[in-house]
Amino acid sequence: MAKGYWIARIDIRDPERYKDYVAATKVPFEKYGAVFHVRGGEITELEGKARARNVVIEFPSRQAAVDCYYSPEYQIAAKIRQEAADGELVVVDGV
Image (cartoon, rainbow, N blue to C red; front, side, top):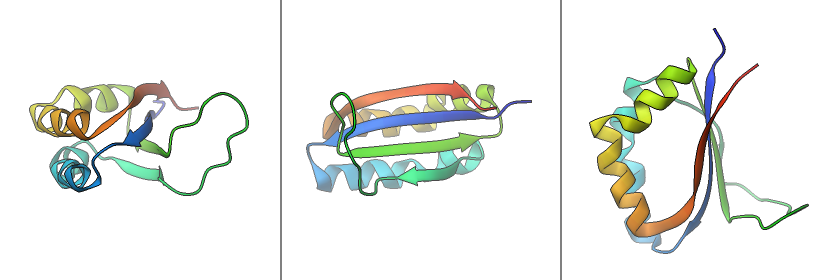
């Protein structure tokens, strides 16, 4: 079974509030087996408009990645993130 990945591109507007988001993700990420491969870090913009923060999270499967997003625990965190940042989040299949 292929793994599923979240790819998030984020511009943080409220760094203090974003810390609350990070804290709120602990439970759902543990519950759904999230493994971080990229979490911020320096970027080099090559094509298009980059966002300041980029995150790649691996899940055991595509379904686990989708279930994590729609879980009640993550939806609480998502509301905080949406208050504190702008961005995009997609789920992709691994190889």
